[in-house]
Length: 175
Image (cartoon, rainbow, N blue to C red; front, side, top):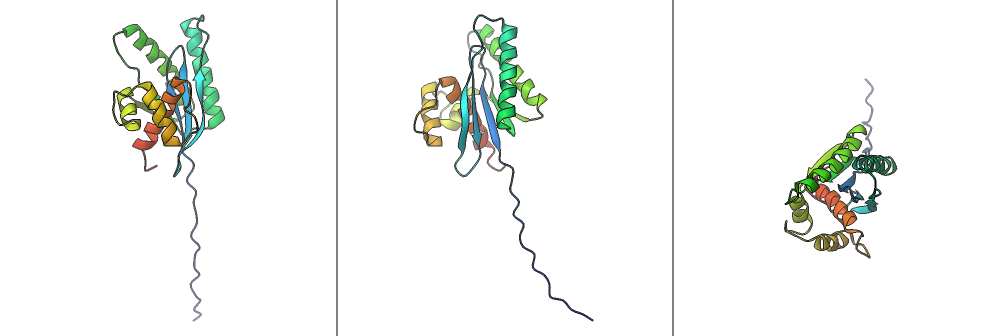
């Protein structure tokens, strides 16, 4: 009988794929976007605003947003798209337009087989600032602090979108 020594197996290090979240703050005049990569210290990869021409029809502005969302998805390869739900205030017409803008962003994410998460404005503000009635400027300030940025991200639409992505990362820590 031959006895051999057991061979020790080296532990395989399996890298988790990076979680990249593309956050959107929908609007038909400006749709803010922000991309964050999860890490011990989250890393801001990019941000900005999609701004369709104001004199174009609603359909053309929505098409612009759809194409812009697809370009961002192809550029950053997010694993999740997080979108702020429309706020229904006094102006139902505005809420409807915001819902349509959010809808085309949802379709772009679905077309690319991405996970989708939706958050209310109050949930986002609570996750970032600690209170649901925070102002856009307070959200912008906290985004800057949480990510250790030298300057506050501008415009406010972009800092709101970054906040949406951060909200998602904070709510799903166990990825």
